[in-house]
Image 1: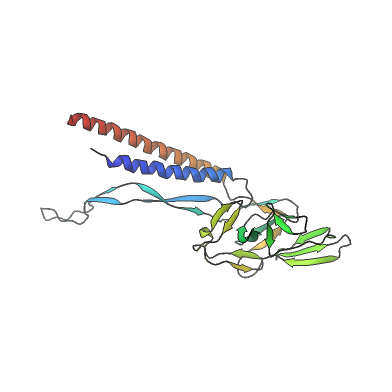
Image 2: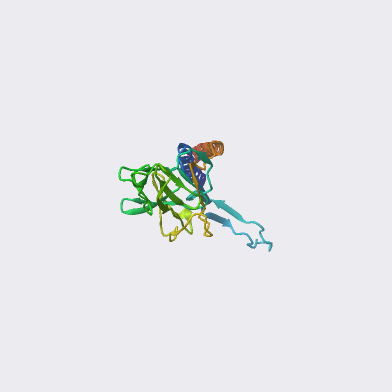
Length: 262
């Protein structure tokens, strides 16, 4: 004798394990600059139609609802949610935050990657690079005699010497995708495009394309709400526990039924 409830509850436990993994990663990255929270999505599985709704009975009446028995749940996707995070002021002119939907483009080896982490530095060759040493794109090289660096809301990067003379101006661009949720996370706050994300587009900050504007001297915090994640964690834990109790109860019922058969 078998009981469908064993497998149904097991699917619920597996789903909550995935949910807990997602929540744990969100909480682990609560202080990661530019991090975007993830959300696990679930759907019910196939149903066993014991009696079809609308079927005719032997008495000539119509069954109004029928009998449908579900077989559990499964994870359908884990979505990245790109809502804006809050801004933390740093007063560092190379700390840049995007107020809007755009991404910075980074040359990561031979591959273009995209990030919301605008913590930049100047390397030994004068290139503007991120925390991992990869160059911002389009590349910007700061003159050796530059003393003051600034970036305005439209992404104009200005390097000046000690007298205030402008040595160089460059233009930072922003990038976006038709479906940012389709981007693939590859770690280190980087995303790479996929077929689902669509083709990348670029524009100047502050333009009509809606990429957003640049905030100099600020970093975008993660969009994690720790309280919400803790609540979700408790709900996930209780759901997991409830499903485990279903398995225990179903197993006890199965043992009782087997004892009766003997």
